[in-house]
Image: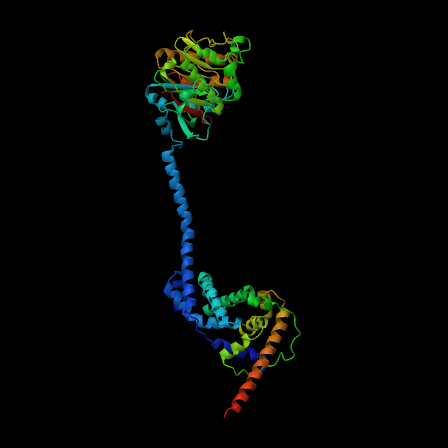
Amino acid sequence: MHDHEFEKQVQQKMADLRMQPSESVWEEVDKRLHNKERNRRWVILLPLLLLSLSLSGYLLYGIFFPTATDPEMVLHNSPIIRHQQDSQFVTGRTRDPFINSERSKDEANTTVGDVKGTNRFPLRVIDKSRSVKRPDTQSRNKAPELIKNAGYARINIENVIPEQVPLKDADLILVKSGAEKAKKNLYRQDSITDAPEAREPILAQIGSITPQAEINTTLAIKNQRLRSDVSVVKLNRSLGLEWGIQIQGGRSGLITSPGKSVFSGGAQSISGLPGSNLAGVNPIPFMESNHRPGFGFTSGVVLYKDTPQNQSIARTTLYSIDHIHKSGQQDGGFVKCATVAARKSTCPRAVISRRQYQFLYQQISLS
Amino acid sequence: MIDQQKLVKDCLKGKREAQRQLYEQFAGSMLAVCYRYTKSVVDAEDILQEGSIKVYTHLHQYKFNGELGAWIRRIMVNTAINYLKKNSRYQSELSFNDLPMHPVFFENPEVHLEAKELADVIRQLPPGFQTIFNLHAVEGYTHVEIGQLLGINEGTSRSQYSRARALLISWIKKNDIDSKTASYARP
């Protein structure tokens, strides 16, 4: 026998060896195989199931809590929209134009282009900020009971069309708010350094008109604490503010009503103009003595009653702004934009395009 | 071959009948393989079971470029090795030490035993010897491959094998003598 003969014999014999396994072996194999298949099916199905669940959840959430970037949401939720067909709404820059006075021509042009031919309300809800705290109603004890059904939503003013809104029916006021400094200014009129009386809280002035106005203005100002740029506050007719409210962040504020000046500010910002350092008097020369709303230099919101007279005022405002701009005074960027907007529009339309600015609106029931 | 291909494809589709057919085709020979590596039929069946599941779950890796039987056998052998490594009954005896080469290494006696008897004799080897003997003598693995498979030196595998072989030959010879004696003693 030669080498490996033994191994060959062993291999041969072992190759012939057959044994019969018990039936339980196959049963177990079969069971485990098909369990595995079932499990594998689940491995595929489970992510799909989770995906579809989350999708449907998302959709349902969108239905019941409409926070999508759908302009229609605002159309439904904002009472101002009810007046969109026959109203005009104006807002200024959210960012302080005195700080950020440069605005590109392109942006202005785009803005105007966007304005043209559109009649829909420009607000766009991007997020309903349920996470935003309700205003601290206790800290201002004058109006806590009025804050009912308060809800918040962040809105993006994409194209702020300066439509005039007849405030006598309006429920909402857009209030520009901003930094803590702006809030302080509204109260203390820090910017109006020459007038001691200007350091009095704005509320004193407001309160002298109507309690309701005070309450609402308080709320409006308080909203600044919400780190929003604009709050929309439900406005009651009893405010007496028939057709205009403007609160400007940063350096000025203005609340107007026919024949009354609730508050005005922003004097410092229009340096060189008559009355620019007087509190309580609207410094803008083209503003009439009854303080019908003018154009906000430091941005904010101006709501106009849609009357020929107001349109005329607004036109004059824009003209004046243009004039200021041409005379090389400050706030050129803002003015330029407004001017461009005005020139290209047939009616008093002003600064638009707020794509990047977020506003917060608060709807307060004053039932 | 074509039938086997169809069988494999059907198995891949998850057809139970095909799976059963494939099992029946190879279970007998594969249980014998498993049997040689273990000390009990139950263990062998356990390995067969585990190996069969591996066969079905990895069947998509079989590319029809070799004998299906050989492919399944490799899976069974690997499963058996893993089983021995993991099973506490085998673990302790599966440590391999270098041993001096046995002098009767080149002896090639004639094996008169039946296949089952020979398998039973192999199974009486200590697990380490048994494993290496099976891998080298029966499966045809080289000592290098055995070394890689078991994580030992090639030399260790060689020396262990020589011992296992010598032991087995001595038992076979003894068995031959015993059987002859028994036949002479028969009336």
